[in-house]
Length: 304
Image 1 (cartoon, one colour):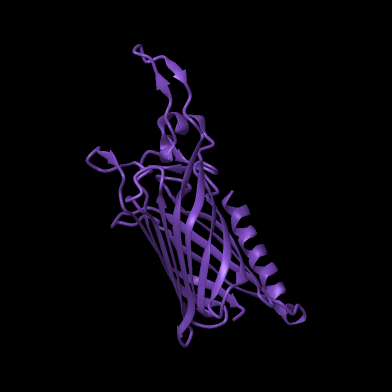
Image 2: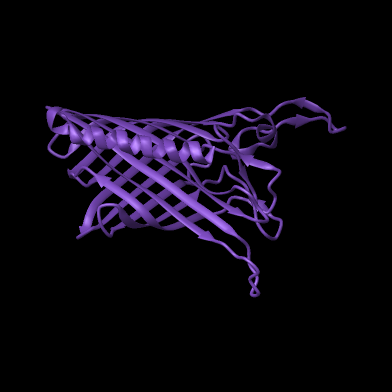
């Protein structure tokens, strides 16, 4: 799975590069993107200080395809990431996993504003575990899976910043795993049982939300060979606890050494009160989730 995914990332990056090289023959399309692969290894033989043999890799690719003709615009984004760690004591421990696809169709209303329709999909590639427990699955592909559709206005004063505001939209959460659905994972209705703890009905595998959303995006070279990308997504569900805003904020800083070497620093902050997390004290409830990844290795960027 890991080898196939890494190969897929670089095939996608190569395909994007090929598109970029022919972009000047396609009048209305603009292609850009970046990718990175970082590797680390520790090998120990009769090492008196102790330790474990370790191998780790993280791969990511971001592809953007934008279309502009007269008053019509169409912006598309695909973000993929996967990372894993192999130790003597734990094999194939996942460290990163992301599928993020979005598409925004716009029609010009004024110089900086567009009427826009936004569609998005998020999920992951592989099963997730709450380590050190590597036998109980807590997430997997399409568990959860998120589909979003929103109608609103898009403000774009420059080519490196956009702000989408939607008063009406919907999000569908899918938990395509019966055990997780029965537990009520990711906000779906859990299974019901009678007084003897006998199953009456399985948990629902879908959950609809209707509400307002905001999506802000920034992507620019802030200094020579240093680019910063950031994406903030907010969602309020009118149907239940609209004051509890769902937050997803991602930041990617890329420092380019040369054409094929780079350092990447990526962070992601998530808060969703539909997701219960078991903490170290044994308590379960919504938590602020935070992830940080720092990688030094092969990197490539194309487009402007």
